[in-house]
Length: 228
Picture 1 (cartoon, rainbow, N blue to C red):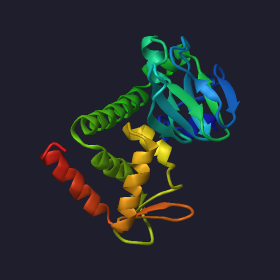
Picture 2: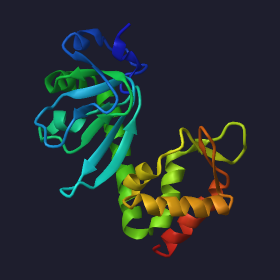
Picture 3: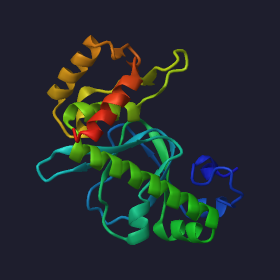
């Protein structure tokens, strides 16, 4: 069975992936290892077989904004493969893992010879654009507090054992949340304290629990209606 068969872009499709895998490389990586950096001229596409990575952008002054965190089955680097423009983001490993590194020419051959793959890639890119558009709107319209509410909702998943609650596992570090919404760590710490006092969140050893996510949703919706 092809090693790439579990990648979301190919899952369930009847494609002979082995002949494309034979023209790719396999890279193991360690935590904090940089896989792709800003302005690199490389155009390879990375398919995550195991491990997790973080995608971020950095200003000239060194301020970082986190765009995504990716898990096994995800891919990155497709933009450079398609347009040949130097890398626009940094990708750094969060954990130990392995990736299939496919040259742009092989990736485009695979993409353009299988319509189903192309359609999936278009949908993936569209979903990323929609998420970035939503975050841009929040950054423009909402104050820090409501951007935080929105980000916590986006990061969370329904809690299986408690109806209506949501959970973020593992609990996010304050400086990471700050880098996701464009503020300082101290501001996040202050807001988390207030949310805890209100009974809206609870931090446990393994998770951050959103006790009343509907309240956070309502606050964000109201702030959107009144422009923050």
